Length: 136
Image (cartoon, rainbow, N blue to C red):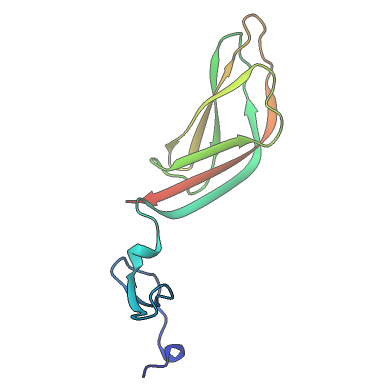
């Protein structure tokens, strides 16, 4: 019989790797197998996460106007997904319209001044951002 603790480890689990499973729900025939693909949910596999925490400068905007702010985030790439949140209260009449990686290491955040008549003066606000890279 093979001593599992004496076997070499692998670097990564492939979809077609097999694992021994003792199926406690089937006491008559408990010996089963599972593939690497069965151990993770179907869909994209996350391959890289980048967390960024700093301040973002919301630009000055006239009433009803949109403007962009950019962040330099090493490792961010075009087609990565981005989750963006302010780590402080959202300034009055400011909406966050979208966040996108526009070029390598560059993330753009679009803001809008939703007030009908008052302009917004620039403000530095703490933010947290998560860049997520995946493969199919």
